[in-house]
Image 1 (spheres, rainbow, N blue to C red):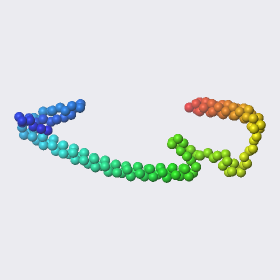
Image 2 (tube, one colour; image 1 turned 90 degrees about the horizontal axis):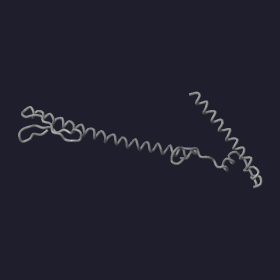
Image 3 (cartoon, rainbow, N blue to C red; image 1 turned 180 degrees about the vertical axis):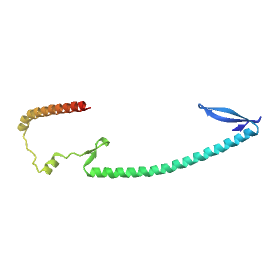
Length: 152
């Protein structure tokens, strides 16, 4: 609040992004109003400083929590990798597949030895079996979807 040279008291307000002067009055009552505005301004400054201090304390606490979360994530990553998982495309965790050699060693099975003639004969039959299995699988999938839709 300020007083012009004629003794009139004005209060500046921001309305709609513009600063507007509001006439308060003239004389002793206007001076008391100016003192009250000054007191309110000091209270607002003190409240703003207190809020800034609280924000700084919370930022420090947030940093501690962030550090703890990063440490927990590192432990989780190490544990999952040790358990045989890997991160697929930097996203979800997936169980790593065993290679054929490892599966054979684990199962105690010997690697089948096939010559080119046997493979040439087996390919058409294998393709037919695969197509049938895919058709059966699709039929089962469609039947399950229909049952689920009917249940809804």
